[in-house]
Length: 345
Length: 113
Image 1 (cartoon, chains in turn yellow, brown):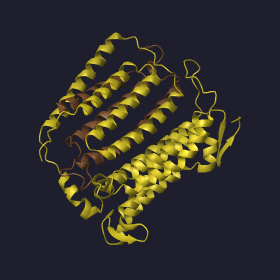
Image 2 (cartoon, helix red, strand yellow; image 1 turned 135 degrees about the horizontal axis):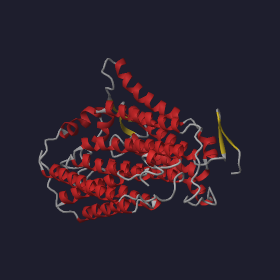
Image 3 (spheres, chains in turn red, brown; image 1 turned 135 degrees about the vertical axis):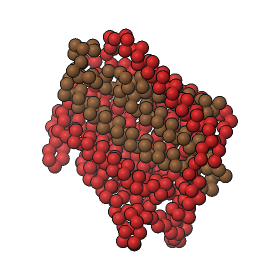
Image 4 (cartoon, one colour; image 1 turned 60 degrees about the vertical axis):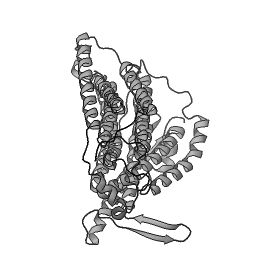
């Protein structure tokens, strides 16, 4: 396979330009923390547009969904930190930093350029040829994730689970002291009526959309990771709009159980293939004619994808809700069986 | 030309990330880690070559884009979110424990400042 030669695409060049401007902006204005975060989210959107320009629809969906939850994460952290970074008084350090940054940046650019203009021998054709006969799916990226390289993915959702457990442990019974000076102004109305109403209307729509993305994942762009992030984002919106106590009462607080259930389901899907005398994580697929739905192509790897979905929902909720809860000191206290409200809502 | 633009973009992202990583407070370091993960994801993605209108869905185009880097980057995006979250929580705990978000706590009061 030879490296594809690309005609200059001014839309893609513009996207690169905007991403670069935002990235430089983050580096220049990082002392103004909220402003830097807004610029950073612009870099993230730019990156997802680049994925869109160069034929990676799965990555666009994932990057945009992750962008939402990571900006919420960093906003929560800003609640606990001063709003600006004090400046350091060592001018020599600044020159050293700039020198290192420019050197490494140029080195990375040269490396990427060399990689793009030189022909590569890719093993991609194997996956493209075998996706439909071997994995029963047309979306090669998803088939690789849940079938060909399912063991990798199992390892990756385990990493997610470990990170979620670590965060839960680090924040257990943690009551932070909020900064007294240079802090962000607190909202007068914690749960604005408009946001509350919109969030409730949006929830069923978001859940339906994530189910759609989940089900089409094996054939068209989508899948467990993206669907999990969409569901997680929609549920986190309920926490933001209605408060932890309201959401906790409806959703239950045991998100770590969801994480465990997801990893367990994915592992069990792998173990199940032993029962049929096949190696770990072997998948099967078939074609059925179901009344009403018509022709349906199902793969056992979709159960594995459901495990991925459950883990991602659990991890997202676990990370953002535990961090969200510690930013409301005094109003809530933790008991062994859940939350009891002490202050006024 | 497209390759030059893409490569320059990744280079600027790496440069900005390194600059942020070398700051003395935890918050810019976290921003730097996020920025570096964008750059690394684009780098991995570029290893499959850049193609227009060739989404790796069987039957959608004559020649498909390389699906393997895309699958690797997809999980990398989600994992970098979890790692950022872990880093952020460690940073918050450190800031609460030492009353300062300087990355080198022993220098926090009278050394570097």
